[in-house]
Image 1 (spheres, rainbow, N blue to C red):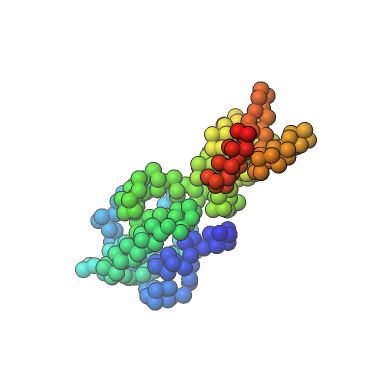
Image 2: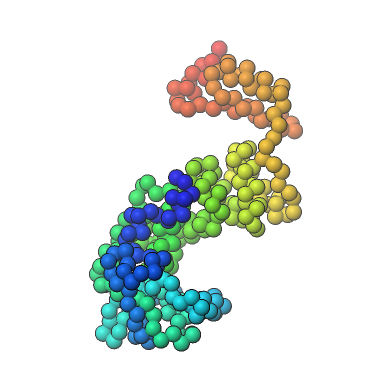
Length: 288
């Protein structure tokens, strides 16, 4: 899957379930209308699991709303004394900080909202989502339904640490996400790359992982070396012509790719095979 496709999140399937705010018109993707209501008429959800909000982050959001307005509308349900908030707690708090009189909302029926949440969860649990799409799905659940990682974990039947590890992958540069989606690196490699300080370091080590087929353990070692001040050497390495010649002879003898990996003392010979039948054939040849 291309990076361009990934940048659209989970594609039309999930995006169609819960309207997003990038559309500046008064009509949402689901045909609902955006309306403005008095800020004081929107009451926080008493079941809101998140009770602690970073003051500095809230102040930054308030300044942004003061300058640009609320780009993403709040999601609410009707209540006897106004509206009950479903998603947008930080936006509501920031609006009150700057004294905003009205806020844009999407009013949804509570029962229909539950159906949307269930549909989104079912969509996330599909087998054909790649790692990044899955992570975006968890993030969307948290943002659109004001859920914690623990809440999401319970709803999708995974541990909180699994959810946290998936969401962390969204912090990777685009190139690393592409490599992960294309199976050039594993999730273990990807999580290890997140331990580096900047994008340039990640790009360099990513190239090294792919070029030298580094294991996760080897990658962890490289990360520690980089963090201790060592520079990353180029992933390209010159092949000893003598070794290349021996690799060719062995390849012709066993009928499969052979890689010789010399070390300071000794080394290893790696023979690739694509099936049990091919492995049996190679073993029989070596026995002769």
